[in-house]
Length: 95
Image (cartoon, rainbow, N blue to C red):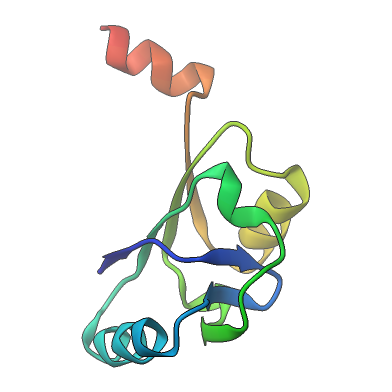
């Protein structure tokens, strides 16, 4: 399952709308893997409804501007990170 969110942080994936949170939670019950599409604006602390723990996320696709402390925490919880704009990926897309 690919999903974005209202915000993300130490508590996990957060939504601001209870209907969206409920729908996401139901879909997650059927998903084998969760891929988060998270840009740097999502790392601000906001929102009130936790959809799932950070450890439930299999892969995060984010950008170079993501906070290093979040990236370190995600890695420590086993989340695979794909950082768009990173030199390694820029070389791949230029080839």
